[in-house]
Image 1 (tube, helix red, strand yellow):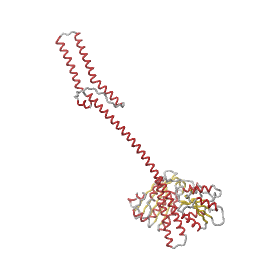
Image 2 (image 1 turned 60 degrees about the vertical axis):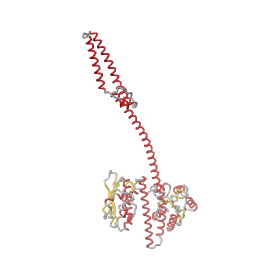
Image 3 (image 1 turned 30 degrees about the vertical axis):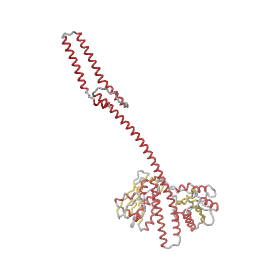
Image 4 (image 1 turned 45 degrees about the vertical axis):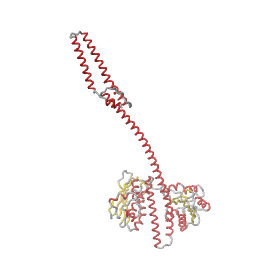
Length: 521
């Protein structure tokens, strides 16, 4: 309200005041001189001195009045400005001069008040901002924890589902293999072969989903060991040839002589890249041929080797606008493709991820109706070493007369029956145990030449049971082969470290199982 009253007053400018003071001084001096001259035109020097003294005193008085009116308000204003610069936000005393100085003082006080209010608002905003940042940080930390927990739950779920799916599938395939070994009509055999192939296709789908989940969770790693690219390519081609031959396709492969004999890398993932590309080519080719070619590219260093992989086919081809989409998860070039050819749409997505994990690149060229060509470039470190086969304990059962006796430790009844019948038809004597306790009781009751061990038992862990057997001198030398649905990466090494002799993953392939058993009995 004081500021309002000050603004309502009549202001006089400094220029006006100076003019008034100057005019008053001149008028006063002139009047004094006129009066003195009028009274006595002949003044003495002393009288002139007195007159000068009076004028001087009047000038001093006028100077002090001018200092009080003009200089003191300016000094107060200067001190107030210095205080504001030092951080003080207090109003300054304003002299009631009625001129620009008083107006400047009131304006300065208003500025100080607004500045103080702004600083209060900034402090309040900063406090609220810090609180929000704290809240958002806590929420983000909680969200990250939930995401980690969800990822771990997803990983655990997929691992458990893998085991739960592989176990019944092992029973189905085992029973199909048993029936296929018996007398069947041509139609029955064809139907059972179709059923077996469907099971294998389902297993491939499960493996694709698990691989993609591992990639997304960042749990898939690449091993570094010597392997032969030519040997891996030959093994993959041999595995794919029956499918190509069944469709009447030509199947060629060529490895350039300049491809190094050994490189350091992950042979399993290298094989998976070749398998996915060749499988994709065979699937989408109805007539013509499929070709695999591996050559050497320009390396980045003398101790490196660049493998250029090319898989070409004469299949249906891919539209130009779909070339990028085929590398996306659960995506195929045409919605009718999955209905006609089957598949999950994960093969090429996994292949691209594996190529990128190697630091390589993958490209595709295609024309509809004429075929496709996929090119992959991977760089490896050259190796002068020779790969060594995995070490396994050199244990064998004690020599005995008559057929070898095998103990099957398996909690799934279908798998247990299938294994017993399969081995009995090969001339082996078998006994079965559902739990670890039953297995120990069977071993106490009689001698066995070999044990087939499931790793997940109702009353414990097959690995711990094996360690227990290895601590007993009676069973130290008995071969123990893991037959388990826990087919994750590194599972074989885990089994061997626990004292198992070898490892066969489920679903069990009869030739692989029989060959493994023959190595030890």
